Amino acid sequence: MKIYNTLNNRKEEFVPINEGKVGMYVCGPTVYNLIHIGNARPMIVFDTVRRYFEYKGYEVNYVSNFTDVDDKIIKAANEEGVDASEISERYIKECKQDMEHMNVRPATTHPKATEEIDGMIDLIQTLIDKGFAYEVNGTVYYRVKAFQGYGKLSGKNIEDMEAGHRDLLVDGESEKEDGLDFVLWKPKKEGEPFWKSPWGDGRPGWHTECSVMSRKYIGETLDIHAGGEDLIFPHHENEIAQSEAANGVKFANYWMHNAFLNIDNRKMSKSLGNFFTVRDIEKKFPLQILRFFMLSVHYRSPLNFSDTLVQSAANGLDRILTAVERLDEILGKVDKNTELKAEEEQVVKDIDSFVAKYEEAMEDDFNTADAIAAIFELVKLANVSVNESSSYALVKKAYDTIVKLLDVLGINAKREEESLDSKVQELIDQRQEARKNKDFAKADEIRDQLLAMGIELKDTREGVKWKRI
Ligand SMILES: [Zn+2]
Image (spheres, rainbow, N blue to C red):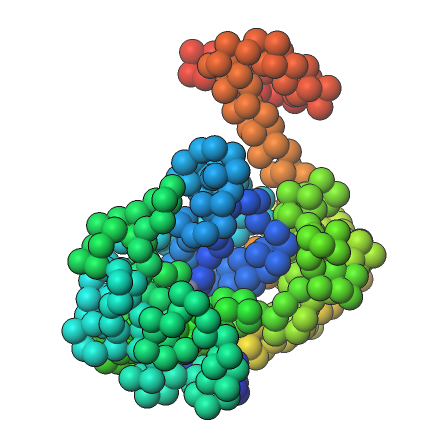
């Protein structure tokens, strides 16, 4: 299996540290708002990478953090007049809902920055003890020039970075030994959350958390560290500087970065009015379509998002799901005892060759675009060569293969049933919540809404049951 490693700017054969296992860390979102579709891309891409490793029999330890202390969270909290923790908890919950609807599986561990402060203080202390960090007036800085190899991930060299920095060194920063040095710990300001530390009350800098959480939940050296390409500098460069200085070993063997996302060929930004949350998109398309659309482009290519392109992905997915439905129907009709016929052997060989093509694409740096093309070929073959006079063995083979390959991409082959189930369950949960709050008008309204969808509720001693009417 080949992975494009940003560290060496080339595709490299994947060799795990421990045979059959993958330790993978993916930088997660800062939770101050609903996630936008730019956040969704790494979630979908790296969930697919994980699924493919699992398909190949690897045991994957997948760790992805929530940054739940940050200037943006504090700003949002002050605007609403609530605690920062209320903002972060709310948006972690919302983010998990979006992930679920995008069929992004929960990580093995989802650590939160605020629950790992002790570990961050330990890391900072180690860096001070080893001469890689220093404290001035309650702020701790990382001494960039003390670390040999700063810039190796981003390909930047110290001299160029310095030239860019010299004139930026203005008030407040003048206490730094060097313009390149970055903050590991900052003193508290009025109205901000803070923790006690040997350097006074304050909070950690952003880069610190990923170094600490990845080591705690995976180990000193990761197989794969991943994230959006916008994180390469300074975030990932600084993570390397912190981790390698503290641990004395290589931080990550493979660095994977997904490319950015444009909207109608323009950068997504609030000021251009083309900023979309995942929730905005869900109003127009089921998120399964968003997922399929995102995977229809290789993760290292820029992704252009437009309604037309998403619609065309939706049509493509529909073609696949229709073929699966047809095979499912045929399965219900053919005699289960019919074995493969001699003339069907070539079709089986063709199916296997498309599976090989799919795997070859995925093993070439997770080329999901080509993997999807192989699924389309498989669908075409099934539409032409599998019918009600086929043997059960052949129909089952075609059906199982397509469903399996879709599942590795995180695409559910069953169109409506599943999504209806989760939609119904969500409404039932909302109704229970309304009843708990004695908002009976709302509870009745939800019951009527379900009735309009053809769903009847029954309150039983074991809870709420529902059936189609
Ligand atoms: Zn990170």
